[in-house]
Image 1 (cartoon, rainbow, N blue to C red):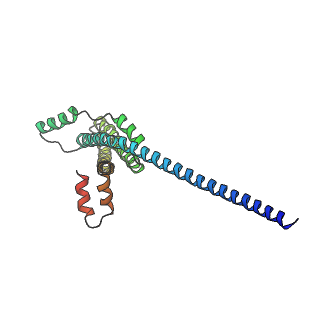
Image 2 (image 1 turned 180 degrees about the vertical axis):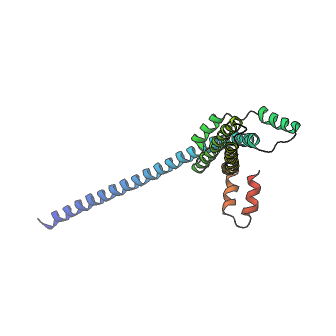
Image 3 (image 1 turned 180 degrees about the horizontal axis):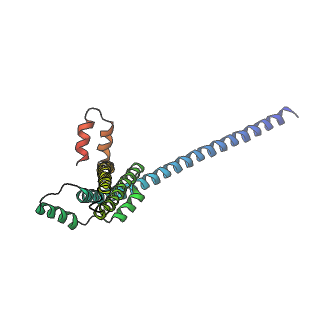
Length: 223
């Protein structure tokens, strides 16, 4: 093969190689662009989903807080060993009975759908604590019926029932304290969540700020 032919072949090889290189560069650029567009679209969808969740979360929390507070107040009044005068007791009962709290099952269902994981866990703990109080209260009703049914002359049996009554009363008192703490915890978690939704920028700065965080964030939380 003479030098002229070799020159032509070399030129063709260079043109082909250059074309392939340009094509591959274009392919990589296009793939990179498509990947970036896809990632941006996914971020936008995630942001839209998060915003939709936030839009539903605040009313779900507000409804649940009202329902839990009503449950707590009713529980404490019904099981409290302290009773006020008849007029005060009548006012308390009327206040509790006249108020129509959010439907319990509906508010709990909205929490199941929209609440954060910490709120769901705290709400489950609060519900379980409330159920423990109710279980012990039913035990107390049964025990009191047993005391009333005991023969007045059976001193040993009445003494035994009295000891059981005292021990059960202490367990109820402790269970009520634990239920109140659990209710307060889940309410505060939801209040913090609602506050963060109402003041997202200020709350975010509040969490990372220094000396102002304790006092300033408390002001935001009660706003």
